[in-house]
Image (cartoon, rainbow over all chains, first blue to last red; front, top):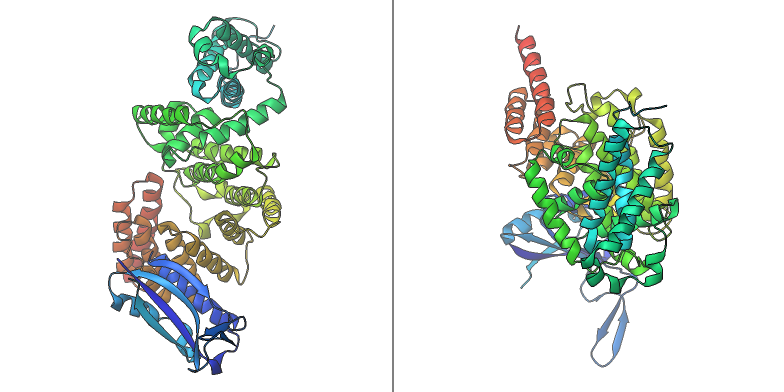
Length: 108
Length: 416
């Protein structure tokens, strides 16, 4: 078994609060992975309000890195045999309905 | 003159008093000498059996037992050279002179200490349950073997090994302090949880034993709620769970011991008294911020108690989602899939279940069979057969066979 980090990204434009249905859908998705005993770490949701970016020369800006128009909203770690399987998990996540995307990276 | 005509008196007293007496004696002798405590209690009961069979019953049999046990303990201390050499240093002289107390307070303190001593994480969970049954609940080896569907020899060996672990443990039951309690409370709660489940989902066909396992687990959990250190939210949550589950015990099995599925149960047989108790402990459990797995399971059991509720399965699915994220187990995964099917329909439920790939599990095939019943009866019958072949539990086999036969009958009726 290998471990893969799933990084959730949302575009800054779609940062409205998720509805109870969206939360439920996300929970079902996450618990569905756990039910297959393939969740290594249920990860965390990351705040966009309490965020700062630290840059060279003591330059600190508010918010997540804003040059690109998207921010990381959270992450989880799954354990699967192949990256394809991890990608299949990612495909089922409701984030795409909100214009987001998921980056899948093997944990070395 | 009353003679001992009641043949059930001694077995009853044994069940009630054995664990109390062993606990009090152990709190004096120390855990290392648990065999000595057990010998004294056994001898006491032997003496009672001999005397009461031919003579008049004492006015207060329990007090009589305590007196005899106390005297035997004192005699033991006087004559035993090994004790003098090995244990003397650990017991202060003034304590040795003290009377052996069998009052309510010392019994309940000793029992609490004993619970903590017995639930030793160093032992396998099966061994912990066996120990709890023997030392805390006064079950005979035969009864334990019955409950586990094992041979007496197997249980004997298991207990022997488990007691060795206890003996090597430094756990001081005389000086049960807050730190020791909180570090071991999880192990204690888990043992009681397993003890209860052993009764509730028992492999044994013996209804009486199953019920006694459940009520013993509740009795021990109640002892925990009587002490300030152990009366914490998760203890109350566990007790609430046990009460809710027990409320359906009478409705859960038919006369032959086969399990009656939740949906087919006679709700009139549910115990409202136990449901009320469950509610009481569940409220107590919610006094903090902690959410343990017992909270979630008690919550799920709670949603099974109201006869009807429109959104019941939504709540149950949410709780199962949380539970599976907290701790994976195949049983939780299957129960979650069932709740998923209840909320989103059988078709999606089947897909969610098939992802689990628990091909060696009887419950997995039984759930798939249930979900296929209305749409693919042939497939459902095959799946039931697989489940029947896989399960080792006799009541379970009966239940599954009944479901399968009903389905075959329905299929045949439709053809003609």
